[in-house]
Length: 409
Image (tube, rainbow, N blue to C red; front, side, top):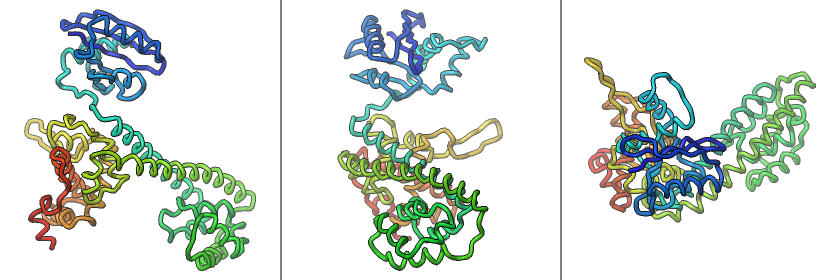
């Protein structure tokens, strides 16, 4: 049997093929374009690659056009963690030498010796992979929006505390369109104090507000005209220009997050697993799409629910050596799924009586902290989700929390 290892780079790739004995049978240096991909496929076909018996490939990435080309058909592609590949390198040489062709050879030998210990890329459907792209992009844009909002808030504290006080009653604060419109009209506290009642109303209308415009404009006018400390005029104007530059970035981040959220709302309900995911308490379209993006729809990806829980980082891990033993949370996990699980458990506490009773029992009877109790609830919900997806059943509160529901009532 032949095994293939590819050392991935931005412009070129090194390919190595080894046989069962570990002997290097072929190596090639290809470019990252259509011509290079054809050379790679021809090389694999030359050494026995067929549609029914494709040669397995190990590579240090799970995305990109090269991976997409290799994943056509029944081929198994293994995304090897670069840290794991570095540890395997020491098995072949203790001199700590390194080269790209040598790394390709190491990857090929990983499959030859330990292919059973590594997991190939899941065979997800194209729709699931498209939802994953949109959900991850929306999650990234949300994080980016919050990061820019925090930068803007920090800047406003230096010279414009009136704005923070004025926007404090609003949900999402600086990310609201009303707040951004007012900051555009008055980038400094001096200019904000000069705005009239009519100008405040116009800014609120431009932001799309429909109700309570007169009352809100009067409140804003009183806040901005109150007594506040000021920076020197030149410094204040300079800080106002810096704020406007950050405001442009925040506008773009808010627009991107909203557009991607609409794209997720269109794509996610089309997936067959959407009804099952949405039947769980605490999961909406955005959060359900994030969960689907990370677990996929390949039913053979996880052997059992324990594998899914370990992948999400919700199950604890035991470290034992001699007389010492400790049980701690997992550090190596899917961070995106773990973050979605924290939000899922937080929402499920108020949406499900059984989930709330489970959370309170972990807090009161077992003495867990808030994060530990939420992680335990997420761990339980993941096990239910695995069962429902395998059996093609919707979530049922009475079946999920049979005894806890009676106690909660």
